[in-house]
Structure formats: structure tokens, C-alpha cells
Length: 427
Figure 1: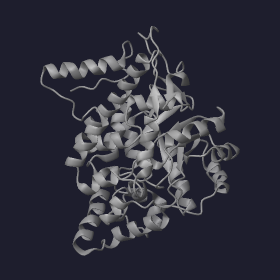
Figure 2: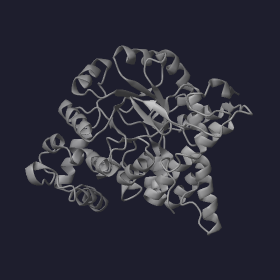
Figure 3: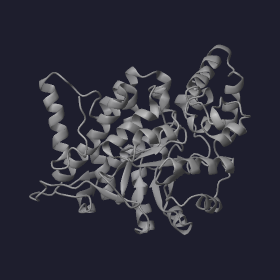
Figure 4: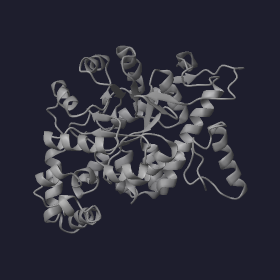
């Protein structure tokens, strides 16, 4: 089934076109590849995906109370539609860092997508490009950023940076992101150490420890040198990317049979574990990143007003309010509950985005009405990828944008710019 895109819907409501596509398909016995509602999507993924893969994507920290708080925060806000406003033509676009996006939506960075589908990040990149929705390349991707960028053409993309213990590696990753056409660097602040994640701990499973989600590292010349030059190289020392998947698969095979990764693969994993994150990171380190790039720098993981003000003092260009999907700190407040405080602290000086708990187009509208310039979505597209590959991601994106478009109009607004907080009531 061909996908309706925002480009194809330039003269008509995207939401109504998407609805018509689904209903027309039903006349010929075709149903959506993946469920259109989050609860059904989650249930189907739990049934069909490998237990370790589903647990890694779906799990959170500790008792997973922060995951519950993320959702509860959305449930505390109710929409109050207004009537008899001409919404026959709607504009869902927003401006962000000088670019006009078709909707206030980005794809959040998710690591190790290769555990849910063999095409991993490449399938997501192609789907994002189809809809013009920015993809934030994960630092822990299963496919190198250069391959994903090539598949996206001129479509927008950003790069997520986990600040490594190696400053040289940080500089290399940032430089590669610039050359790959990324238009912002997203520094994830809340994962200088991994949170306590029982679903993974009970299975003694960390994808990176068995070679999944290391493509940005194994394709990086600095990392290969740090790992002792054990990664197979092609001309001029460039990695032979076709060899890397087999190498990394050998890690999982060796671990499953002997409990130990083989020689070169073991060096890759050990080097990654030694350099992955930096718990000593402080505000004083941010100027070093500014010296490396002229791209906008966005801090991801801000949840307090005082941190937001300090970020402004540090000269950053944007913030993402996030609990990391509830995966890092158990017992934290929901990201949407933190959003108004951060928006107020910033006072419009830089754009504020948010993620964590976003499951529908209505959720996107609530976050935008509370001051978010745009919203990042994560688990829905990851689980859809596992169920149906690129087609699944295509459908999730189309459905989110369509529902946002329809909800915007049904609430009585014809553009994102017109949207106001009075559409919401706290209960």
C-alpha cells in the first residue's frame, strides 16, 4: 500500500487523506500493517518481538514509576475544543533553527534498533525522509550515520551525542555529524551512567555488550585506533562496513556459546564500555563542544527551571525536556509536568522541545499547547519497526501527523501558531 506523505497532501487535509487511505484499503481487504492505537501496538509487539528486544525497548528504570508518571502527566490535561471556526485549511508546520518542518514532530534517538529489525536505523531514516520529519541519529545506532544520511538525501537530521570519556572521540563524532548533513547536535545529559533497568538486568542483557548498537563507533577512525586497530579496514583505513555486521554478530554467537566475545570483537566491546559515557561531565565542559561546531547545540534531559536558566547562560541553542522515556531515574516526575516550568524559565529565548510518554497526535497537541516548539516520539516507531520494518515506521509517522492534524482542526484551530493554552484544562 502506497504511503500518503505530507508533500502529496499539500492541497488537502493530510489527516483526512490518511483516514481515506485506510478506509479505502479496507474495501479491498487491506488493513494497516501495524495497529493505529498505542495500546494495541504495544500488545502486538510484546507478543511478536523477541523477549529481550521487546524488554529493552519497552522497559524503564526501577519500578517503572517514571514511565507511568510520563503517561499520567498527559492524562491530567484535558482538551477543551472550541466550535464554529473555519478549519477547512490547516497548517501543521513549525519553524525550528531556520528550517520549516511539516509538523511539530521529530524522531527521538533510540539505540540498538538492529535488535528489533535487521534494517534498523536505515529503515527509520528512509521513513523519516519520506515524511520530512527530522530523525535524531542515535549515538548508539546499529547503522552508521553516513549510510543513514545517504539514504535520506536532503531530508533533515540531527545527531545525538553521548559525551565520551575520550574528547578526541567526541570531536570525531561531531565532525562526522557535520559532514553527514546533521543540522543540530543533541547532547544527552541524563545518561552519564546507565539507569537501573530490571527488565534487562533480569535477562543479564545489554545490547552493546554483545555488539549491537555500536555502528557509530566501529565506523569511527578514532574509536578503531582506541580499540587497537582491530576493526577490519578498507582503503585508506576506512572501515569495510560490509564486514562489520558479521563481526558484531560473531560477538553474540561467541557469547552465547562460550560466555566470551572473540578477540577483535572483545576489544571493540571493551573499548566501548570504557569510553561510552562520562559521569564527570559538568556545565564547564560545554564550551569545549561549542569550540568544535557551529551547529545548534541542544541539551536533552533538562527537567528543572534552574537547569534551563543555566543552559541559557552557557549559550546553548535549545532544550529537550525529557525523562529518557523513564529509563534512567525511577520515581521522577513526568516530562510533561516539567515542561511548563522549563518553558517559563527560558522565556522564549530558545526553543524548548519535549519527549517521554508521547503516544498519539493528541499528546503532541497537548505538549505544543503547553509551550513545546516540537515533540520527539520514540517507542511507538521502534516497536512498529520491529513489527513491520520501514512500512511500520511509515505508518506510525503518517498516523501521528494525521491525528495531530485532525485534533488541531477539531479543537477549532487552523495552525500551530494559533494554538493557545486555553485549549487545555488541568484535571
